[in-house]
Length: 78
Image 1 (tube, rainbow, N blue to C red):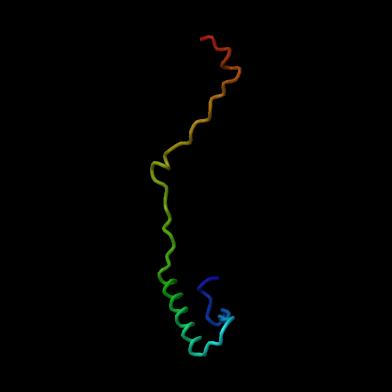
Image 2: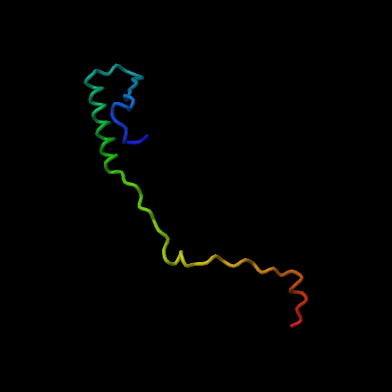
């Protein structure tokens, strides 16, 4: 979900009370507190900065492959 949708396009939030019988004032207070906490968290949320590889990592080559010590090495007389 993106934050670009108009308020009319978003579904209305719903609250389901599973226990007890809260009053209208208690529900309004709950909605106000949760909405404020969400707004505070959303305003302070930042995307992580993109990390670029260091010059050392960019210039480093991969390790060499292991030597093949097959039949070719056995025939070397030097």
